[in-house]
Image 1 (cartoon, rainbow, N blue to C red):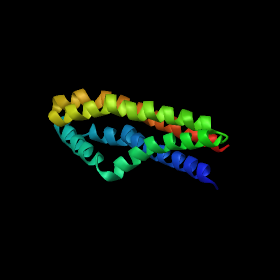
Image 2 (tube, rainbow, N blue to C red; image 1 turned 90 degrees about the vertical axis):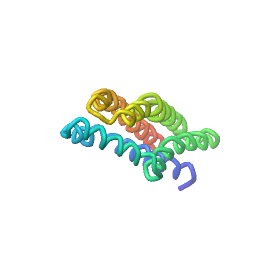
Image 3 (cartoon, rainbow, N blue to C red; image 1 turned 45 degrees about the vertical axis):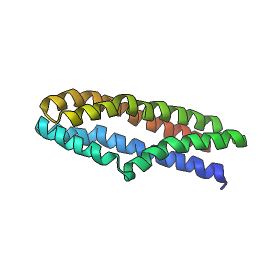
Length: 151
């Protein structure tokens, strides 16, 4: 196994793991929060958002952005078969995960942090979840594209 192979496998791993985290939020974390009183849900989600910027999640998030890009560069420079699949994987994760997070989820997180009440939750819940669905699909697509580089 050479450097290219290792990087592609790591790209598949981190994009898949990141997608799994986002999928968990879309499928049961937010659904569970909706069972709480809206002000309690707002407080809980704001606390989760504060925890998210710690090293465990941020390392995964950063790796899911940087590894596909680095893998694409290595693949293109080395003329590796499948390099263009990883380029596509990198583009999808840059736009669909990083871009959506920066433009959609983080501003909603910031607004929720400033207003941890029922109205804050009402303005946060559905839009944040829709953006999170986009991140989930983008990570899954990025992972699948990187998998194609292996075949």
